[in-house]
Each structure stands twice: as structure tokens, then as C-alpha cells.
Image (cartoon, rainbow, N blue to C red):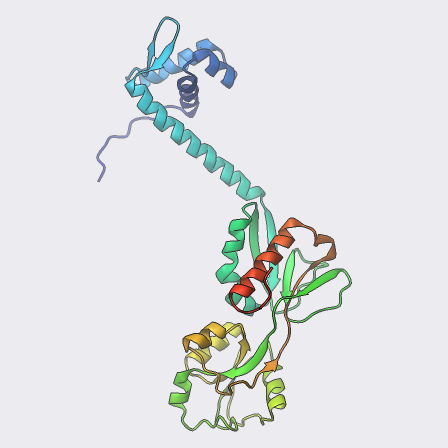
Length: 305
């Protein structure tokens, strides 16, 4: 516990005068810097010394020097003023920074952008980053966004689509599900509870059709988000459709199993999307480079810039 008595602080203006006078070791030069007169500087310094009850300068005939107390106080006051200036600069800058807005589906927010986008922001100190998560297709014509990541390529003439990786789908479940449900027949999918998501109703029918399976007659679990599907699957609630390579790490850790092995179905090629007129903007180029390198490092893509 600090029992030191707090004394009344000198005014900020007096401290600024002291810092300038101590830095220049001249009342005249301090006055020129602060656009006041030398007598005004002298008066402010005398007021400060009287308030502190301590002399800070040794006044010689034609020179001015700091005494030991003045040297100690100068170092601390200068540091404090610099911190105040820095805090002020950062506050004002944070309110005037441009915002770089990224739009994509919730699945890619939780697995790709949210965990890693901080590394991009560290490269772009002049920008605030905003991520809009929306299952619907963002409209560049009416919405304030800079880039989007869309699951399928569009044909808008004013937009550029850059394919960034390929998605394949295959059923996944947790080891716990197989332990709890020995009656589940993976050869026919009968007696298997399927977990579906209302934001993507096409994945199961497409996979079942390609690989010749009939939809199981057992009850289903319908959830409204990719994150909820993953949580339910890991807890052993059923078999869900997994998106590769998005869940590769969960498979590698053993959190999820792929009971149907190599039976995968190509399910799209997400694209980075931005306006043609923005293609030469440095921030757009920087984001595309960062994203491509990240996808390569995550083994979602074999392309590296």
C-alpha cells in the first residue's frame, strides 16, 4: 500500500514551460518555442519553484543549468508530457482511420478470419478492420464493404472473382458417437442420426446422390449455424456433413472422424471478391496477398504468392 501524500499538481501549461526551458537551458529559446516572452517564462518557472518549494535551476550570469532536483524532475515531466502527447495522437488517429470491411459467411468468419485476421491488421496500422458475417449474399452496389469471400463465383460485370481454395464435403462424426451408437450402420447410413444446417440444405442430398446412399429414415437434428453443427457433432449427437479443408485440423487432432474415407464430393470454390475499380488499391492487394499466404500455411490451398 502506498502511503505517500499526493501534492497538488502544477498546471499543464507551467509544466510545458518548464520542460521547454529545461530542454533548451534558456528562457529565451523556450519563449520563442512557446510564442511567449522571456519574462513570462521566468515568471512561470518561479511560480513552479514556489509551488514545489524546491529550486530547479541554478541561475548563473549568462547561463542556466539544472540542479540535481531539476534534472530529476525534468526527466519525469518530459516523459509524462510525451505520454500525454502519444495518447492524444493515438486517440485522434483511431477516430480518423479508414475502415476496411470484409464480408463473408459465418462459417469462414469463425474458422478463417476471426482466428487470424489480427496478423493482417498488424500490417495495416492505418486501418480499422470490420468483419460482417452474413449468410446472405452481400451487395457491393448498396453496402459499404471492400472485399467479400463468396462460396461460388458470380457474373457481375463490375466485380472481380479470384478463386482461393476448393471445398469438398464428406460425412464426419466424433469417436464418441460411434461408441454410444453401436447400432449405427455406416454401410447403409441406417440408424444414423444426420445433423443438418438450415443455412445449407443442399450438401447432404448431393453427397448421398453421388455415392448411391438412401437418406436414412432415423430422426434428424436441424441446426441454424455451422458452428452449432460442429459443436453438436463433437459432442456425439450424430453424423454431420464436413467441409474440407476447413475442418482438417479437427480431423488431424482426432476430434472428428471421416467414416466414409475418401468418399468426398467437390462442393465449390470460394472466391475473393472486390470491385474492378478497386483492384489497384494497396489495401486490396495487401489483403489478397495476406489471404493467399494464410491459406497456403493452413494447407487449404497449394498456391503461394
